[in-house]
Length: 474
Image (cartoon, rainbow, N blue to C red; front, side):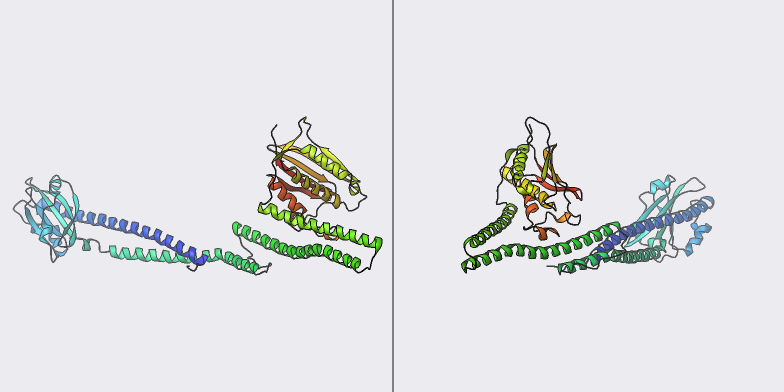
């Protein structure tokens, strides 16, 4: 497996490749432009020289004269130009190669565009001969006697572009300098961009090792990085809190399971050792039985949660009259002594058919019992009158049942964790027994029926939970 590269190296090299590709493309365009411009300039200079010779030829020569009589022509003896004059039949009349030491015979052939020159048109062409390339310009010549001739001025390409190679060198140096400067800029920008990411990577390693207070980047101006660092900070704080909760809850759950076992063992030993007898022994046995039932209930609750999460438990999809089920649950609780001070209020839509939902009646009953028991147990004093309101509303394809009480509410810092398994709050362990699985189990039961359970609001004025279930269309 290949060793992964750093983010800095990964993006720096890719940016560099893109930059080099773009600069190479620009270099090709610049080279093509320089070459084209050099060709144009060379042809223009050659045309100017050819026209000078042509004008002098037209003014001073006839068919029997020689080019030595033409002053501009004589000046060409000191240049590298090759001069040719052809008649209408394509016969070479005059030839001069100036200072050019060699001029292949193949290059002296008549131009294929000879007829165009005789028609008083100027031509540009490139001629190749003996492994060398030449530029040739053809201009018309009309002698004093009316005879039409063609004058060709030829120059080796190497002599036509004396500065092109230097221009190519300058362009190469410029492109190389831009590439180097661009790479340095990209490198330092990438380094600045990836530095907070490297710090976050190191912080994640610290969290993986159990240190939940890592050093995070500061002074970052990029909005996306600020959001990332903020989210990372919140995640670290959340993990730290969850780890603390896990430690506390493990201790609490262990205590809740160990307490009834210790109590049962102690009482049975007392009865067995005859420390207590007669009626007191019966009372000890009854307490042991109650504790064993409570222990059995906690174990069954654990198994119930596990069965729902693994999908081992199936739920019915029956038609349930929600209003009727709520009334049954209220009647079931109203007869209990600790619910005597509780006042139940109902707010259901008036419909002769009632409100019908899809679900499992037993599971829904368990959820309602748990919510109402939580509301009652939240009341700090049994003598205080508690009002619990149950409000049903139809929202599209869902039926939403709000369960609200006017109790002291759930502290704001505890609200995000109330559906976490084994979470029992900061005060509850001192005033109530249980594993802290009630709301966890209730939400699992609702979601297993394609519904949901949510905390809508909680304050000092009371708490509101909302149960949602699929509606049966009338």
